[in-house]
Image (cartoon, rainbow, N blue to C red; front, side, top):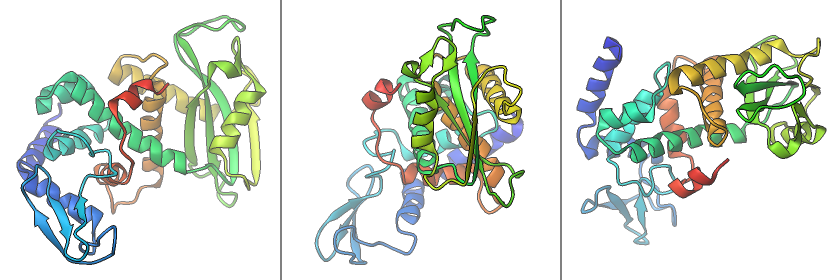
Length: 296
């Protein structure tokens, strides 16, 4: 770990060494203008501190509001301070692995894996709400083992559709990027069927989009090379940091890569990656281990 990262991590651990500091930060995220009852909008509450995370009981209707309900932290028995460490490591340039997180915060591998995948889920949840619009370009590439046959597919080679949406006024500016693993039902050997591109358009592109161009032929002279390069960068990052992936969880890691790329293209100096991640995690719905392991 780089010296600067080590120092920042140590400062973070010292700041959030108790649950109180973490709870105070979550309170500010949930109620930036002060407590507001989710049921009756009353603005005064009594704090119940007998639980691991405090509850806030409305003075009017007695409803007990939790800081973590309807967030990815809901149901987690892991200290909030450890969640903040996970967010910090996740937000570093290369990201982090479950093994590294496990060793850093002293949890089981399963817990570390689950925490990181919940964060990836939050990034993917945000991405699903952002549709491509304006001038949209869609291309195709592959992740996985290089295979020279132009016809037969390889079990470890996974087709990906990548799309970019830019403003018609600034078509050459960095666009919003989406990558989606193509389902096997939309493949014929190594060729992406029209049903695959139609599924991408229906789910990822805004209905009133001005202009859409799609090129999925592997060796077409009209293919969007600038988009395909992004898939290449994503593949190198995945292989370098995580030493390769299978199909089952590939989409989650592509979501993480696209989140980083889009944040870099659109962020301002007012917010860093960790702060943005924390907001995403706080406003994303609860996701369970069973749901994550069933996702394909």
